[in-house]
Length: 325
Ligand SMILES: Nc1ncnc2c1ncn2[C@@H]1O[C@H](COP(=O)(O)OP(=O)(O)OP(=O)(O)O)[C@@H](O)[C@H]1O
Image (cartoon, rainbow, N blue to C red; front, side, top):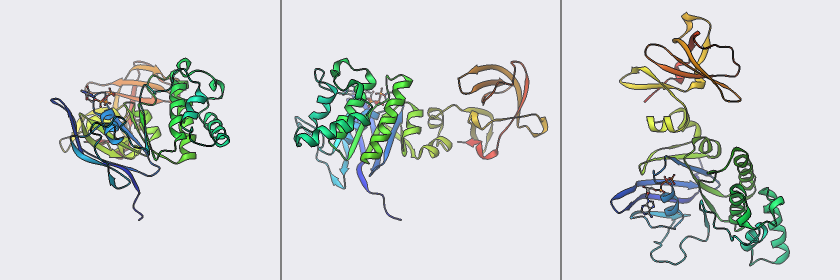
C-alpha cells in the first residue's frame, strides 16, 4: 500500500492559557487533498488547534510539521503564518471598501494583468459571486463574505486551507450555496483542508476524516461512517446524531441504537421493543415518532404518517445496529 502523503502534522501538541489546559497531547495528520473536519463542542479547543497548525500560535509542547519539515515557532513575528497555509477566520478579514473582484484580485496582484483577470473571473464564477462582483465587501451578506474570503484564499493556491466554522451564522440556503461552491473549488484545486465545526451534520457531510475533540483531548478520529456508526464513547455518539439509550446493558456496557435503525413491525413475536406512541413531529422530509414504555423512551423515523398518538407499536432492529460502549 502506498503511504498517504502527509501535508500537515501535529505531534503531541499541548497548550494552556494560564491555568486552563486547552489542548493535551494532540496528534493529528492531514494528507494531500484530504478534507479533515475537527468536531467538538464549544470550548473544546478546535480553533486553538487550527491556529497552532496554521502557525499563527505557538504550542507549549509538541511540534507542527509541514511536508515533513518541522515549523519554527512563531515567537514574536509580526506576520505569523506560513506561505502555503491559509487560515480563514470567522471575521473573514476582507477589505471592507473594496469590491468582491478587488478583494480576490489582491491575492493575484503580482501576476500579469490578463492572467489575473481570467483567474478572478473563474474564481468568481466558481464561488457563485457573479451578481455581487462589484459590491463592496462591507455590504455583502455573511455567506457572500465567506465565499469571497475562500475564493481569495484559493487564488493564492495554498497547499492547505484552514476554515474556522465556515458554515456558522448561515441560513440553510446560504449553507447549501457555500457547500456547493466549496465542493467545486475543492475538485478544481485539489487542496487539503482542515475545517472546524460544532455541527456534526457539516462534519459528516464534508469530511474525508473527522477528528473529535473534547476538553482539549482527541477522543476519536476516523471516517465519517466510522465516527457515526462506531463511536468510542457516549460523547461522540451524542455529538454525531440522535441516539436512543436502551435500559438493558450488555457485558456492563451501555447500549444505544440510532433512530433510523428502528423498524416498525406488525408482529409482536418478531419485535424487540413494545410501547406506545407518545408524540409525532413533522420535519419536512420525515416524521419523528417518539414512543415510550414503562422503562424507556425511544424515537424513530417514518417517511409517511401512518401512526397515531396513543397507539401500541412494535419495533425491531438488527443486532449489528445495537451499539454497546
Ligand atoms: N487567547 C486566549 N486567551 C485565553 N484563553 C483562550 C484564548 N483563546 C482561547 N482561549 C480559551 O481556550 C478554550 C478553547 O477555545 P477555542 O476557541 O479553541 O475553542 P473552540 O472549540 O474553537 O470553541 P468555539 O466553538 O466556541 O469557537 C476556551 O476556554 C477559550 O476561552
